[in-house]
Amino acid sequence: MGYPKDVLSSRAVVKHGNYAVIPPEGRVNNVVPGIEGCRVSIIASPKMGASFVQYIIDAEKEGAGTTKTFGAEQGIESFIYIIEGQATLGTGGKTWQGGAGAYLYSPTGLDFKLAAKTRALLYKQRYIPLEGQGPRVVYGNVNDIAYREYDNMENVFIKDLLPVEIGFDMNMHILSFAPGGCHPFVETHVQEHGAYILEGDGCYLLDNEWQMIKQEDFVWFGPFVTQAAYGVGRSNFTYIYSKDCHRDVAI
Image (tube, rainbow, N blue to C red; front, side, top):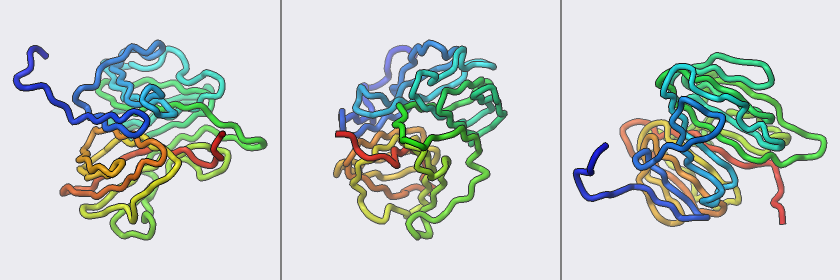
């Protein structure tokens, strides 16, 4: 890149244990054993206060991806979402070919091979067991899922990517605000989120501070952080986000 042309600056905001806004500018490449031929940016981890780890994966060549099963450690569940490009996704000896919008959840570890110029969102967390219940492999594409109205509002829409079943301790959703759409109230809850902005611009309330958020930003919301958003651009403000669910709180 060479020397900067102006004073160094960043839109990044990191409040450890509270919330974080991680824009694409300033992300660095990380070497992650078992993932090759990719730029790997770790955008959330327990080091900031999150209970999960999230990555942005950019393929640098054809066939980039895993050389060993990702998230195969006992008790780790994982999820991959193809933001753009083409990929082969697999788990348990079964594989699928998918383009933008394809995703795979696995409770036992997953594999992926990416076409050149593919970008993916990768996620892992420790599964919380529930006696007599359990998750299962889920493969799908968000383009095959219809939006439904969010809290009976005509300008805010949501998709559930995983089954709403007690055996799952997490879900992934896509939330989309039409211009001028907003949350029905300021949320304050025990769940945490990791959100990657797929399109548009939004004004987001994070711990009583308004932040301007745009496409390709990542936002982490810690537990009990006050949060709400307005879609403020000329197009929809849309993001994919994680949510922990269906479990009591350990003490």
